[in-house]
Image 1 (cartoon, chains in turn yellow, purple):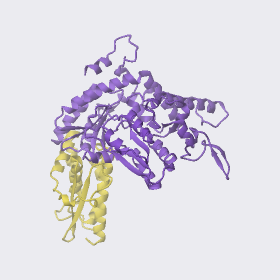
Image 2 (image 1 turned 135 degrees about the vertical axis):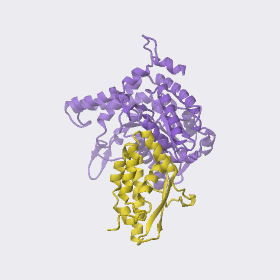
Image 3 (image 1 turned 90 degrees about the vertical axis):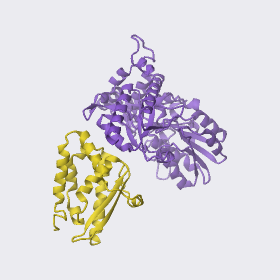
Image 4 (image 1 turned 90 degrees about the horizontal axis):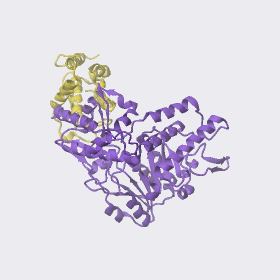
Length: 153
Length: 422
C-alpha cells in the first residue's frame, strides 16, 4: 500500500470529508450552487491549445477537457488541468481537483469516488446527464492515473 | 397578451370551438398537478414529448383491464374486438391527415422509423448519382437515414441552406432541384427554430422537377391542421407521443400508388400473404410494412389522443399557441443578454435561445430548481447548431396546456440564472 498522505499531509479521505463538510454547511440549494460556481471560477486556467479532440471527455453534455502532468517527487504525483464551457461543470471539475490533484496514481485509483459523490449529494442536484458527465470525468481521471501508474509514475 | 387572456375566460354557455379554456384543459393532464423540487411543474418541453391527458391514460388502461389480446390473429371475441378498434385508429389517423384512405396509413414506432422505412423501401430503388435533398434544419432522424442510404447505393445528398432568421430558402432550394433529384425530405416545422416551412410550395416545385417529397411532420401535426392531400405530399410522418399520445406509436402516410410498389422494410409475422421456404409473398399495404406484433394498446392511446385534440379543435389550439408564442417572444426578448434563434414569420410555439456567457446546460439546471422543464442541448440537430455557431441552445416548446403564467415563471427563473452566473 502507498502512503495514504501526500506532500501536504492530508489524506484523500480527509479532503473528501472536508468537502462534504463545506457542502453540508450550506443547506440551501442555491447557496450550494453558488459555492460550486465559485469553486469553478477559481479553477486554474487551461491553455486553449490543450483543448483538443484527444483531451475532450466523451459522455459530457457540455464540453470538458482534462490533461494531466506528472510532478516529480517521491513518490511522483499527478497534476490535472481541466476546463469546461459550462459554469456548473467547472465547479464539479474544481471539486474533483480538490480530491485528486497532487495525488499518486495509486491513491487516485484507490479512492472511493462514488461514495464521496453520493455523500456530497450532487446526484440530487444534477440531472442524470450531468451526473453521467461527472462520472465520465472521473473515468478519464482514473484512466490517466492508470496510464501513469503503468508508465511507472 | 389580451388574446390569450380572452381565451382563458370564455363566456359562459359558449360551446363553440373558440371556447378554449386552458384551465379546463390543464385539469385533463394529471402530471401538471405535480411539483418538482417543491415548486409547481412548469412544463415547457412538449416539443420533446408532450404530456398525456386522462382520456389517453384511461383508454389504454381500459384495454388492458377489459379486452386485451393480440390483433389480426385469433378467431375469438377479444382479438376481433381489439383488431377492430386498432384498425379504427388507422381511420382516425387518416382523418387527422385528411388522407384519401386509411390504407395509406402505415403504423410505425415514431418518425424515425417512418423515415427509415422510406429510406429502405423507396430509397433502395435509387441508383448511384440520384439526389436526395434535405435542409440545414433537419432533425438527425431526417439526416442519418439518408447518409446510410448514400453509403448503400451512392446517392448524392444535398442540403438546402436556411436564412439567418431561420426561414427556409426557397430560392436556394429551387436551384438545387435537377433531373437527378428523386426525393426531397424536409421538415414541416423545425424542432429547434419553430420555423414552419412553405411545404406546399416545396412540394409543388419538387413535383415539377419529377421528385417525390417526404415531410417530417413530428412538430407540425401538434401545432396546426395538416392536410396531406392539399399539400400533395407523397410521404408524411408523425409521431403520437408529441401529439399527447403514448410513445412507440406513430404513422407514415404514403400515397397508395407508392405503397403498392414498395417492397417490405422489416420481415416477420403479420406482413405476409403466404410463407414457404421456397417463396414468400407479402400482404398488401399497409400491413406489408407492419411486421410483428404492433404496439396495440399504444395505438388505442393514439386514437384517444386524436379524439382529444379534435374535441378541442386544432384551430383553437393553434390560436392559443400563437398567443403564447407572441407573449413568450415578447417577454424573452426583453431579457437582457438573451438571443432568440429562429424568427421566421411562419413559426410554431417553439423558442430556442441562449444567454450571453452562460451555457444552456447551466440554464437548464437552474431553471429545473424552479420547477421549469425546458430542453437544453443540440436538440438532435447538430448541423443546425453549427449553422448558428452555438454548441447548444435552451428551448421552450409550448403545447395546448401552457399558459402565459408558465412563460412568466420561465422568465423569472432566467433572471435567477443570470443572478447566479452573473
